[in-house]
Length: 106
Ligand SMILES: [Zn+2]
Ligand SMILES: [Zn+2]
Image (cartoon, rainbow, N blue to C red; front, side):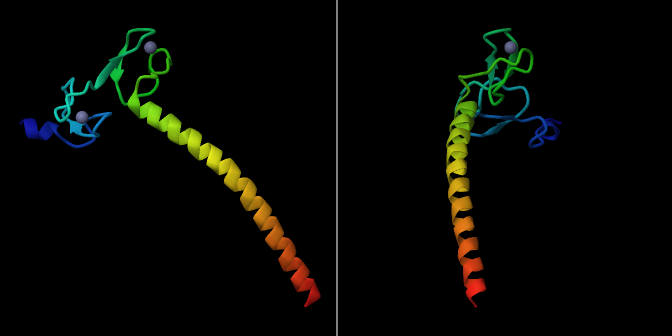
């Protein structure tokens, strides 16, 4: 029964381009025809394209669009977070001081 093997998330391969879940043994996305597997340039191991690091030699897969997106998002969010935390600390400290001064005057 082929329908039994098409359980979502168990035997499916997520397409790195269109996020279509492909059934187990496909090498290309059945929706957009992009490659689902990539060969490691360092050790030649074959792995899913959605993986950003080679499981064999830990070589970084720079060509993965998923990893690129993740890195970009991470970098941006990290930058924003540091700035936001600094502002938050200053604002919180200022608010705390104002409140303590106001409370002392009352
Ligand atoms: Zn696809
Ligand atoms: Zn490798």
